Image (cartoon, rainbow, N blue to C red; front, side):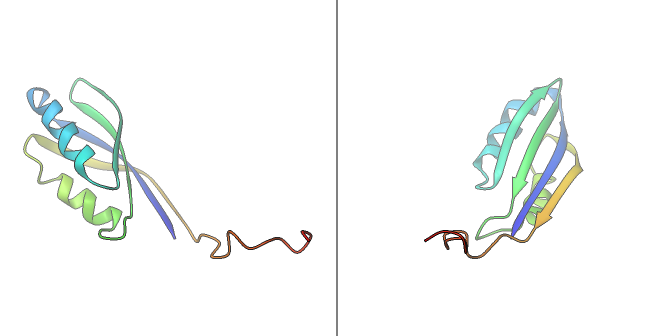
Length: 89
């Protein structure tokens, strides 16, 4: 399964760098952009933690004011990705 969440994280401006470092430390977290205490983040499920759990943990990072879920994508992945298609020989 593929589970990706996009979030907007608002921080105290003087804590933005520390918050970015903490988010980047998550296996499934990735910072894409930031400006004026606003950080655009994607979070994916990992083998150890669901994206929703990572989002809840982001609330606990010192300097984080809010975490808002702005996008959610969830789909079943094809289990036989490596299997040849019926037309291949």
